[in-house]
Length: 106
Image 1 (tube, one colour):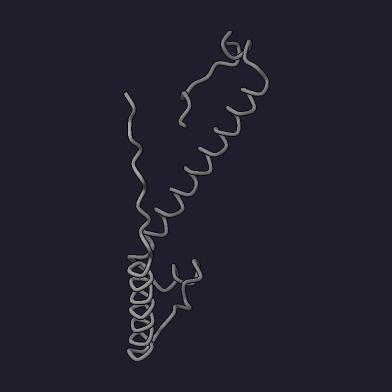
Image 2: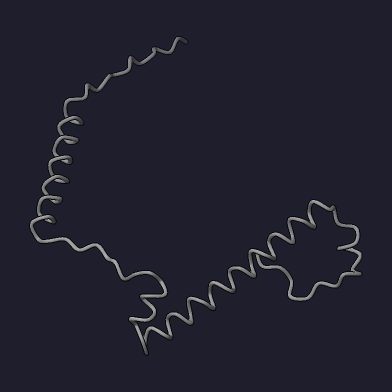
């Protein structure tokens, strides 16, 4: 939730506000400030990645990435396909219960 850009402290709306609501407003303001900081930081990383991508990777800790071989990928794909087949068989074997319809009496 974005709040007003300018809030006057002597505004009667603020003075008569419930303390819990004031606290809630403050917490939202703090969260907005954190969002703005994260946006600026990520923008700086984006711009820096054009000049020195390795430095940005070091800063972000993205130096270790998961690498798999083609064989490992094929094994994983086969496992997923096998699980899908088992799930399909389970769905086919489920017994569908039919409900008896009530007869309406006039």
